[in-house]
Length: 424
Image (cartoon, rainbow, N blue to C red; front, top):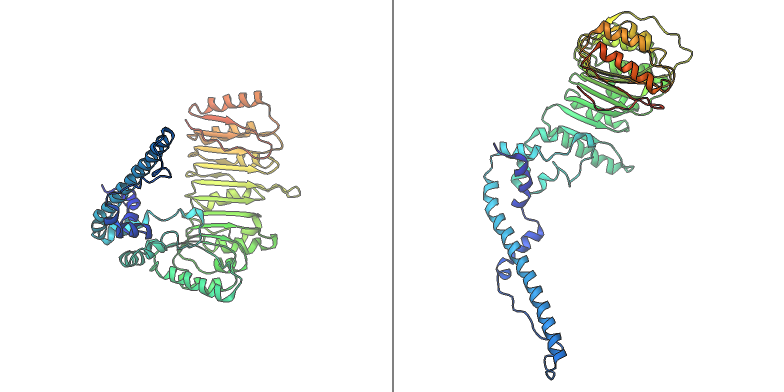
């Protein structure tokens, strides 16, 4: 099997830099023998022991320099020979294999790096004509883009828009993964021809990105939303999210806490493909409704924001057979967690995390939840700032008695429960 990463690391040798070209031009000169200059300040003086010692030291230094130069010459000749041997081999690589190698040079999309001529794929099209042809003809190289109009000058923004549009055109209809900062209004017009291709979208919420979400994005599967979202915009954000509920597989929203009323207009909506969710809510009913509407959900991270004046709403019993990971973080109080556990059954749950800095852990309710769910729980991370270490140990033993395969980790924290990697 061809080691593509190894080949990718050697490709740079096949196209010499200016330094390598200079080495190629001077190869014959480098191969010539080096004649050291043995002249010293005492060459014409009268013979004297001190002078002979000085001459000996000078000769030794010259010989050492000569040996270093010989070593450099040998390394340069080896590099040139390696280049001459690799260049025909690389030039004979099929375009399909070269495209696959190019894919391994892409930076991770999570790094959110703006396009640069010093990184792939822009770097690849600057090497030689053939590499440019292969790179431009490989749509997968142009399917991920982190972009933003960062310049305040109109002409520069226009040039950046042209570059982004050229980049997107090279994707040739393939699914797009985009990470967008807050744009001026021209963003919507720029992306309009490509809305049918967008499958993954990470945005900083603003008017322009909101308008983008309100468009029809039929291929959208992953949505991550950041930024400070004002309270009066909750309904608009919820509407833009629910507009894509049928296709979404992953949903993550930071900076906004939802109320149940925000989702009321779409209470009959379904999330048939949703497998991961990470949101902040102010009522536990939202989680239960989400579980009822997303039958294939396997991972959920729910943050319960404090709402002192909000009356706890009655919940309906809910059994979800697919959920395997559940993380519930209560910013201040666990008072709503017992109500949530009382009517919840998760027979496939493997990892559970929950905690708060206030009030005590609902031990009895959680035991009843485990007994009712009969789940293959492997990892449990729980705790609060009120329960003592001895009490946590006792609770841990009771949980293990219910589920012998469980590794229970009690980790109270002043404000956040620590996420520890533990398993059976």
